[in-house]
Image: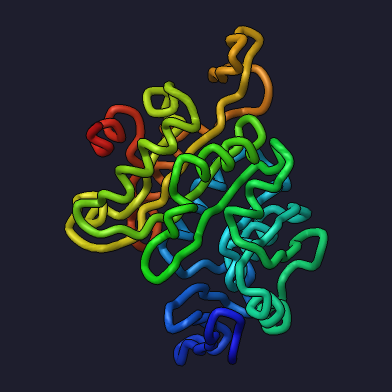
Length: 277
């Protein structure tokens, strides 16, 4: 089908008739099971879901930058009914088609907006979302304006205290893009983000070791400000207010290791070594 940015194609799985893959301009962009809204096929989305499972119970407010077929949004609605989600994609015609093709949650549970992801993020009120997901690609990499310091600052601003940024970074050895993004996110999320284990990266072993091209999921948690915060607005982790996701949580580690393709989290000292200055 023609769309604003080129073409969209649906491909059925011959072994599972209810499963389809959405290709946008020849690139697999979403995989869905029409009979199972909780289904996730892409490994990096399974890793993101493992992180979301560690957040406090109940509905979430989630922003999806790069909505495509809304596979992760369907999963969130399945796992956390009554969540409020916004999917942003630059292709208006694609959003019309996925509404037609797939059983997506209706508005206001899932609103879809045609816009540039950076523009949409910058226009949001502060502290609007519990989760921001960035999954935007031009070819095989994230557009530069969605991986720079301005984007990191805008994502931090859009998150509520304790909120989580999940960013999909496709990279190849020696993972320069992922390492650079760790430093960029550390600049926006605070000097204690790395030692305080509020910043981490997730990938399968071969990708982390720089042996092949693959997806790296970057996780950044906005600190919860406490009464002792400095006058300059610096945020520090505290036991007051909403709970902060623990990237060192043993249960999260088990969930990642138990995935069909096992993955692991680098945080703290391991992440500092990964970023390498």
